[in-house]
Amino acid sequence: MIRKVKGTRDILPPESRLWAAVEAEARRIFGGLGYEEIRLPLLEPTELFVRGVGEGTDIVTKEMYTFADRKGRSLTLRPEGTAGVARAFIEDGLAQRPQPQRLYYIGPMFRYEKMQRGRYRQFGQIGIELLGAATPSADVEVLLALHEFLAALGFDDLIIMLNNLGDPEDRPRFVARLKEELAPHKHELCRDCQRRWDENPLRILDCKVDTCHAIVAETTPIADIVSGEARAHVETVAAGLDALGIPVQPAPRLVRGLDYYLRTVFEVVSPQLGEGTVICGGGRYDRLISDLGGPPVPGIGFAIGEDRLVDVLPQTFRDRILGTRPVVILPLAAEATAPAFDCARNLTGHGIEVRIEVTGRSLRAGLKWATKLGARAAVILGPDEIAAGTATLRDLDRGEQEEVSLEKLPAVLMQDGPEVPSRRLP
Ligand code: HAM
Image (cartoon, rainbow, N blue to C red):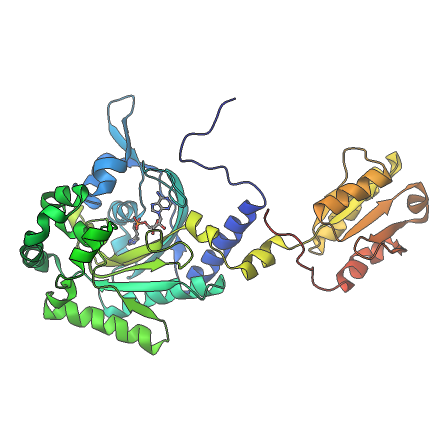
């Protein structure tokens, strides 16, 4: 048997319905705020991520699927979406369109990571990017979009954590202060943090090892060190969110695993998955486009991990999507085949979900199959029904049945009222 590549997943029905429904909700909410879809290649030149995401990041040093193509060019399966959006913004001249540009994307990303619950090597992201606006209002809009999306899915327990990384000019000052405060404890830090000390000292701040965590908790937060302008920016964002009743939690030690961020950074965590498994990450990246050789265009955005999101979807949403119950159509004679398909066409045209029996089951076996599917009703088409231009409609919950003319069938089935949730994911 050929098995799938480690770290990839098969999303089977009915779970695939949840994915489709989440994506439809994203299109509705983000589309309503003026975000339009951008569809970008999964393959990009490796250099894009080295320069965009950052040479010293975990993504670039350890996690990229990089290979040479047949002509020896170094290509990488995209590990994230923002660098690609920035490349497209420059290459496709999006600066010439009305600003700001509001874009969203939905699709797979690839990172060579250690597998665990919620961590895969191919995973889905749903992201938005707002390009060409540097004001705190832009940040508020992006966080509003995030909040509205999560609320539409029925979440009420997710926490938005917010921090201020300051401007790149603030960074050396902060790193010097951090190292000074950590120096007496340097030997107590974990091995990874020993390595980070020189390579990427900011990452020591979000080490999940308990001892490191405790040591870091005593250090001065980066937000206390940043310049007045950056401080005012993020304070205005926080006040704007407060005015909208969007709860955020200050997270003074939140740093992100990608180098392009400045000022506003945020993550969303779920009490169900814990702080180690972040549902969404994002922030402001005002230098990314210019660092990649484009104009000085600011940006802010986020990406939600779709696998993780689907994993913790509220039960109400799952029930709404998975709870629909089909109507089965059972043709019991050769002459019933065409009427059965005609009936299916008629019912689906009225928004009624059907399953046609096409394997030649008997009435008994057909009804058993219908029950297994969780169907709410069976439309039985035998020789007598065909002769009379009717169907026998059997209510599978009550076990009652009645003769209904084929034209009246949709109306009778719709009288049954809203479809009752009956099935849950196994
Ligand atoms: P990120 O924090 O690297 O940010 O990824 C965003 C989200 O993708 C994470 O919060 C997580 O839910 C999901 N994710 C990441 N790696 C995995 C994995 N191995 N398995 C499952 N889910 C994963 C970015 O990618 C930025 N581009 C976000 C952004 C957009 N910033 C500004 N605009």
